[in-house]
Amino acid sequence: MQSPEKVDELFPHSGTNKFTRDITYQIFEPLLRFDTRTMQTVPNIAKDYKVSEDGLTYSLDIRKDVYFQPNACFNGESKLLTAKDVKFSLDLACSGLSANKSSFLLINRVKGAKEYNRRTRTKLTKNGVSGIKISGENQITIELIEPFGGFEKVLTHSNLGMVAQEAFEMYGKDISKNPVGTGPFMLEEHTAEFLKLKRFPKYWKKDKLGNKLPYLDGFEMRYYNSKQEELADFQNSKTDIVLNIPAEEINHLLGSLEEAQNGENVIHKVFSEPSMSVSYIGFANQSKEFKDVRVRRAFNHAINRTELVNTWIGGEGWPAANGFLPPLDFYPNDDVKNLAFDTLQAQRLMTEAGYPNGNGFPKIDIYVNALKNSASHNLVKGVVLQLKKTLGIDLGIKLCSIDERDKAIEKGEAKLWRAGWIADYPHPENFLSIFYGSNISANNNTINSFRYENAEYDHILEQANKEQDEDLRNQLFVMCDQKIVEDAVVMPILTGDFLVLINKKVKNFQPNPMELLDISTIFIKLSR
Image (cartoon, rainbow, N blue to C red):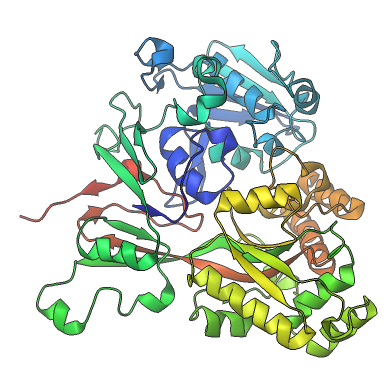
């Protein structure tokens, strides 16, 4: 398998991007999970859960056969997971420690979590979060501040994987280099070129026939400098799964018809699945360049999304036309309308903002975490050209790693950046919460990195999260989505597809809209 970004953080509470999630999802496990075939919430470490009639209390029964992977913090042995470990993991996810970038998931929902977050900026306190209690030998109770119908989906989040207190105390700041989870795989080797995981023999889960999971003895994640290099390794059977295939490569990525007829190509399958993802250009909303909403709106009116998708990235994706959220079966996207491509309106707004024909607007860089001439790089080249043509402004492109981009945002150096968001759980709130004012945090610059603060938006989102009627709740979510459009907080560009290439010998691979990779059920069938 491959990754265009190096994965350095192997601590679930620190994960802020898909590349990290792909690995930590194999090592750590949350209380609940999604069935990647049905996309329904199902039991996991919590074998069952109940919700009180008022929607405020979740009672979770913890399995008694789940073990942490063997590690020096347990004297080289594995350790049985208990309700105490679950409470510690959830408390840690609510903490104010710099290593925790997951607090946005819980602190505005769980009773006592916000107070605990304030008390734990430097170290954890003894009693933990008041609303998270051990209520039985193997039972955890979580009390919410207000009802939230999507809370069970939050508990599937990969950032809420179970963490051993012994490991956290032993490794401290080095915890991200020493992962100890309960998942199907554990770390074997981590270098600058690759990351290798091996099977955890004591993993608790079995398939429907009673066979122990995972099937594989292990797998490797490699880092590549280009998609061409990666595809060459696939052709030479050095890698078996290629994620995120460029659409323009599909028809000729494995050579000519003659080569196929001569048996020179790898026998393979291509999976295509609509992805719950959106790609966008982010604005630093409080910067002097973009604090004026007229400038942000002008940028949105100036770009032709259809041309960007069809001309600059070969039709890889769908132009964003209905708000920030991608098409979702359970959300009325059609009720939200983006700012239309309108060059005259864009020019008028820039003139009103004091930048006629772009005069006086500073030259700044768009930070792009991508390889040169990749689809993401080409997309931004198209954006830069369109903005120059319509508004007369000059923008540069700074290619960087995802860590370099996030650090530049944190320091205020990045005023524009390309980014994407993939659903962590299939719920509108998961997309809209990244604009919530209270989620601005020094610990996590991927959540409201735009520094967008709007009391009206926050109030509507809070009302939506309380609303128990799904139709009324969706109407409120639509209002939030439209507010993001009207305030031009970001420039939504496109929604994507999840394209995956696999060697035919790889069996039981299950693509899904959230792009979750469940390696535990994959196996290799060798030809005879």
